[in-house]
Length: 163
Image (cartoon, rainbow, N blue to C red; front, side, top):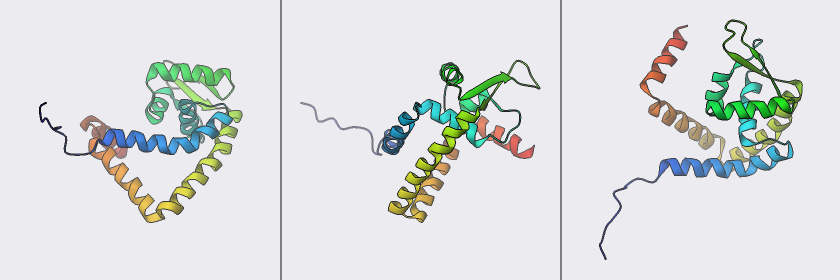
């Protein structure tokens, strides 16, 4: 039997991040299911809830980016959500080739109802970890995201900041 050792020195960060996500979602999923939502539908509603003040709605490309959904998956999710009366879709006023999405009053009601449950879980986490450590976790995650961002995304961010 050969004495081969793994070439890996560091822990598997992507797996740890996925494991942490799943651990957090264990607390969230039951509430989502009670409201008849999948993880993906919740991510879309959360994005739309965060941008509910935008009078023109949110372009589907932005929803896809912020909800971390690929275009084909987003199309199916939006179709089901529209059928269920949670969102509405329309053509963009400035560019008819684009589609914008808005949460309906029923969708915003779900966002409001779920946000209290989710915020309560964050308060629980903050009590267990401490406000400073939870803040450090957020800051470290933001740093990793920025560090690993492709160069073209950094250029896009600089252009948006200049606008």
